[in-house]
Image (tube, rainbow, N blue to C red):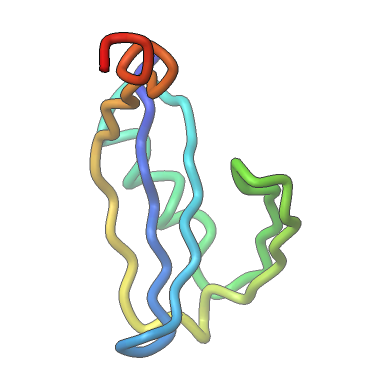
Length: 77
């Protein structure tokens, strides 16, 4: 499984990010298309619950995410 970052932009300043684990970019795109014009809900990495209607989103971006383990980075400095 790969990790993908989905960013929902409401305007130039306001956005919400969602991280998913799925097999491929194509499947991530299919998921976003299947959720079009409906309510979705998820809890982000900070534990904040989000509920939004995708009809009110202006732009959706999907990109593969390569998580960096910050604890290892801190130990090396």
